[in-house]
Amino acid sequence: MLHRAFCLLPSSPVAAVATTSTYAAGRSWAGHSVATPVGTRYRKLTRTASKSTYKRNITVTTAPAKSSSNFALTPSRVEDLNRLSDCKVSGFRRTPHPAGEKGNPSRPTDDQLYKACTLNVTYFDPDLLADCDFDSIRGVSSQPREIISAHIPGTRPPRTGQPSSILMNAVSVSPVGPSFRLSRPTTRYALRKNLIYLVSIRRPTPSLTVLVDYHASYPDLQTTWSYNLLIALALRHVSFGVTQMLFTEMRRSKIKGNFETWKLQVRSLIQAGFWDRAWRQVMETFNNPISGNSGPRHEMPLPIWLEFCRSLRKGILRKPPKARWIVNEQQEVMRNAAVETVTEGPDTLLLNRARQQLLFRHRPTHMPDLATTQPNIIYHIVYLLMQSQQGDGALLLTTSYLRALPRKLRKKTAMRCLDIIHLHITFNRTTRGLHKLYETRKTLNTLLKLHRSLRPTSSTLFLLLSTLRHAKRCGTVANNVVRAFKAEWGSQVEDGRVRRRLVTLALKEGRRDLVKHIGKLETEACRATRLWTFERGVLGGTDRWPFKRVFRYPGRKLFVKNGKERRLWHRVQRRAWLKMGVKIK
Image 1: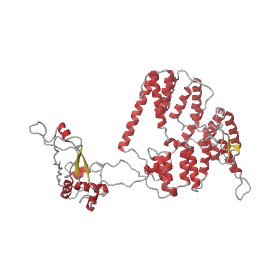
Image 2 (image 1 turned 120 degrees about the vertical axis):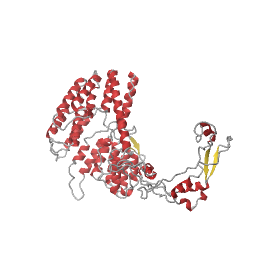
Image 3 (image 1 turned 90 degrees about the vertical axis):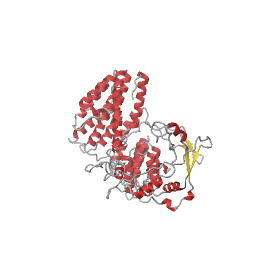
Image 4 (image 1 turned 30 degrees about the vertical axis):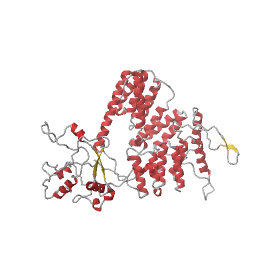
């Protein structure tokens, strides 16, 4: 079903006045048309419409000898335009104004317009088309006119005394800023460039099915990299069916996978809930001897080992089918090998600890030092320890890593280190109520003081407010926490998610005044965002295209989850209206 990618295929531009069949039909209609009033068979006309037509006369403005415009009006062009305007115009017809009536004699009244108005349908015979009908008007170019800007800095704006040809071209309809047209790829690099543009730069981003169809439209240009991009995108969309289809098409096209493909295959099994199956496949791969060598392969690579530190995607729990025994083609009863019970259930503590011990026994021997270790590795290890409820070991590892970091960090590294700190806020399950807030905030301040480049964001405050769900006076305490954070770290720590959680806690406490105040702040923020978006759309904005090189943006910048946030805000608005009668726009 490749029709879903038609919206991405390039189309050739059409000139404003082009020699096409439509233009030829218009020329033929001008010479051979017959106007027939529709509705005469249903009602009788009280008066006969005047056969005279309104003729539009165009006056000639004296043009300078050398005009910068390529559409200057000449007497020959005026003659052609007046000849075209002699055709009968369907629509309102002007009727003579009664003498002696006050007002403008050339303007009819509404009653006269209603009585004199008849709907006309023009018929023309295609057989009457001649070769001359396909010719353009003499003296008028069939190419689009060159459009100049209204006022370019450093140039003199047009004066009122200049000819109408220059004033006609004084308005620019071209978009402000650079533009990009998706061209038809002819090489593998061009297809790769177009895919990155569609995923990272184009707004709105095409759906996953449209991207898959667009990729399937060019089978000769498909590469391992293009398949890896779509598979990673499908896994982020939790589309396991599309993921398996892409793996199948990749094998059918005889495109060999690389290390990234192997890593994505392991990730798809783990996220789908088949952790044990993925582990068996990887261990079988390393236990098999290499061709030409009697010994087994080397140890498990670090990226593959980190994939097993992941867990089941939230909300994905496969229930095993009831029929565990099936009948094969030989009418033999056998166990269904495709059935695998997903063990991620309510009691996962023992399972997580067993997997942690298994991973630590098979960990890579060549582990980098803490000072040179990427934050992504520490993040996965801390996540695994937190799942096993070993918070002390995770806190010790995080503290040692933050102290071993250099004094200056890039923004990307600092944000990833902040994600490690967020794990300690999320997995704090020791206490409840206000004591949980104070303990979590103490841990947060301790970790933030370990490095000067670490600053909390709105996500930090959003996660910190989640500790007040089971506390008394949660709305009042949350409002005080937000004020303290804004005073210490700036107003950028408050966004729509923080305000939504603050309204939720205020509704739970019953603070009507706080709900109205936060709702007013959210309304003003949404209005400012809409005005900024409208202004950027009108003025052209700052387009990120073209680049000398096209880069793939991280997922946190591509998928900001605006739709999910609007849906959650709608629920909060409905709850506030039903519970307290407060209307939040």
